[in-house]
Image 1 (cartoon, rainbow, N blue to C red):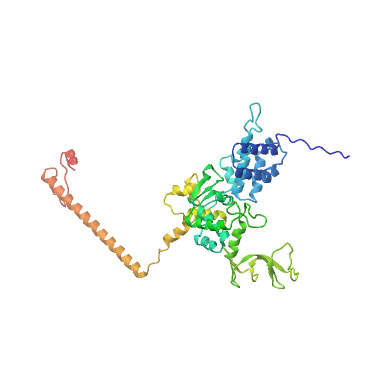
Image 2 (cartoon, rainbow, N blue to C red):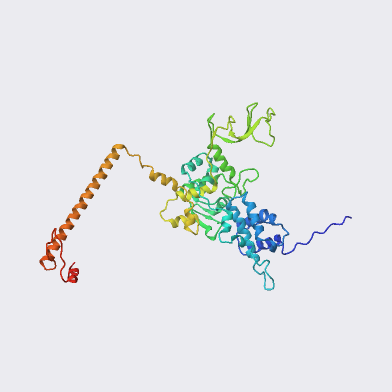
Length: 430
């Protein structure tokens, strides 16, 4: 019988042991499952593979963390990189706290803190995590909604008329909706304020009632494929790819429906892309796999409307009708009004409307307006001169009065004024 080599026992100071204990402690402290899943994925896929599972948690240095940041910066966005650093910093902050009266902390220093010396160095290393959003065209959102069938349209309208995040809408159940009172229970994901009861628009209530007639699941927007039928789904990528495909147009045959397809140059056949890089009909290898028209295979296409689930939240913030910013902040479930203003992406269109009339007047109207302006300026100047003359006359009358009372000597008009011997009395009168 062959002898089995015994694997070395994992030390309690190993990085993977510290991560496991940190996640257990976070769950006991009441962190949401959404947050725990995100941290677990980040540790398993990024942090532990880079530093090593058996590496002592106290041996990770600031320079090693810097190398991780530089390496990840080549493949991910600054916002994602910032989340990586935040999770690693939180892990070491937890490890610096003694776990019991008779135990010592796992580490004494946080290696992530060394990246921020001098202050601001870490932010400069990661880059801008809040890039400027492009303006949102509200008309394009309406066009995208028009090409969807009833099932997809219900989900699309629910996102843009409630402002919910994608995952919040995905896990919504029919029991969370009160059709009689016109509100629904949103179980938040980020903060305590995210859990709230929110109102439903009347048109959205009717759409949801029609959608419920064909639903057989507890989830409002359950999956419809063979693998996800009746279950909660997480990705909505196919829905927004469908919008882009249905709103695109071929400029050669003027047909709609653009996507990634294979075009055979020999038999001029268009077919779906598969793992075999050859035409399924003539077996030719002269094929082009690219985004093109479903009908003729041409790549001379006009791109469709590209939207993402987060754009629907921006649409809601930009179109909701209220003059009180606090109402919008409550509907978006934000704790800071500054955060809410970042979602107002339709301001660009309102700015365009504000300046759309500039320079559009006719020359006759412009001349008339110019003449009126010049006339008003001349009248203004004439009025100013009249006022100046009136002031001069009043000053002359005042000088004559002072002269009669003995405060002034000499001529009161045109000539030089002479002071009296009592200058103080003169100042008191004036």
